[in-house]
Amino acid sequence: MPVRPAVLEAELEAHLRGICFKTGPPRRIGVEIEWLVHDARNPRCPVEPARLKSAATALRALPLTSLLTFEPGGQLELSSLPATSLTDCIEAVTADLARVRPALLAMGLGLAGHGHNPWHPPRRVLTDPRYNAMEAYFDRWGSAGRSMMCATASVQVCVDAGHEEPGPFGYGRRWLLAHLLGAVLAAAFANSPISEGCPTGYRTTRQLIWSQLDPDRTLAPPPGPDPRTAWARYVLDAPVMCIRSEDGHWDAPEGLTFREWIRTGVPRPPTQEDLDYHVTTLFPPVRPRGHLELRMIDAQSGDAGWIVPLAVTAALFDDPEATERAYRIVKSLAETAGSRPAPRNPLWRHAARAALTDPELHTAAVACFAAAQEALPRLGASPEVRAAVAEFTERYVARGRCPADDHLDALYAAEGDLIVGKDSQ
Image (cartoon, rainbow, N blue to C red; front, side):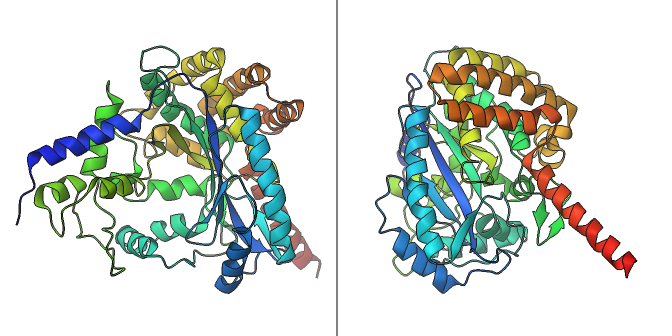
C-alpha cells in the first residue's frame, strides 16, 4: 500500500485545531429547526415521496433568508443565518415560517414538532449517495440509525465559541458548560415519548436513539484541558462513513478511521475537503463548527415552540451574569455524569428517561430557567418572548414536567376512554 507522508496528517490535524473553535466575544446566535411533514388532514397517514418532492420544489422557490433543506425521512429543516441578536434571529425565522406554512398547507401538508415520529416507522425518502452510505453504515449497529435519519427532529441552537482567554466566556468553560447544561436542556424540552403509537419508556426517545448509535461518532469527545486537541483526535480517530466518488457509490471500507485513511492513502488519498466533509458525518451532542452547535433539544410543538429553547439557551450562553450562574448550577452535575461521555453517562440517561421528574435535573432546571428569565431583558428580548419563556417555565419546569408528559397524559387518557367504552358495552 502507498504510504502518505506524515506531514499531511500533521497539516490536517492543525487544520482541525484551527477551525473548530473560532474565538472572540460572543456576538452571534443561530438556530436550525426540524419539523416532521405530515398530511394536514390526517397526520397518521404517511406522506408519499412524490408529494414531498413536489413540496420541496415549491418551497425552494420561496424568498427565504434561512436555508431550507430536507432530511432523509422527509423532515423539513430551516437553518437561520447567523444573527447579531436573539431578536433578529427570531424575527428572521418567524418570517420564513410565515411563508413556508401557508405554502405547505396549500399542498395539503402540515408541520409537526416532535423529537421522534409518534405515528410511523422510519422510512427513507431521499436516495442521495450520502444517505445510502449512511444507512449502510448505521445498519451495522441495528435499527437505531434508520430511526435517527428518518424519524427524528430537533431544535439545534448555535452559539459562539467564546473568548480565547479563561473566564465566564472562555471557550473551554463554554465547552464544559454545553455538555452539562445539555442534559438539563434535553430534560426540560423532552418531547418524544411515543413511537408508532406506543410509549417507549423514555421522555425523549430521540436521545435514546442517539445513545444507541456508533459511539465513535455520536459520543462527546473525552474531557480534558485542551478541547481543540481532544476534538482533532476525535475527528481523525472516527471511522469514515463515506468516501465520495463520481460513480455514486460512497461506501467506505469497514473500520477505516480517517487517520488510517491519511496514512495509507487507500482507496484514494484524502483531501482537506474530504476531512471537512467527514466532520459533517460526526454527531456528538455538542459539535464545534467554529461555533458550538447544541444538538440535544427535541423539536417542539406549536408555531413558536422553538423560540423558548432558543431564547433560554441564548440567555444562558450570551449574558455574562446568566452564564456565570448557569456554570455554577450545572457544575454540581459533573459528579452524576461521571467519567463516561454524553449521551451515555448516567446524567444524560436520567435526562432521556426521567426528564424533570429526576430531582437533581429538576433543581438545576428551575435555577437555570430563573437565570435565563432575568437575563432576557438584558438581551433585548421582546415582551412576547419573555412571556413565552415564563409560560413554559410555569407550565413545565416549575412543576417538574416537560412537553412529553402532555403527550403521555393524552395517550393514557385516550386508552382509559377506550377501556371505559368497552366496559360499558
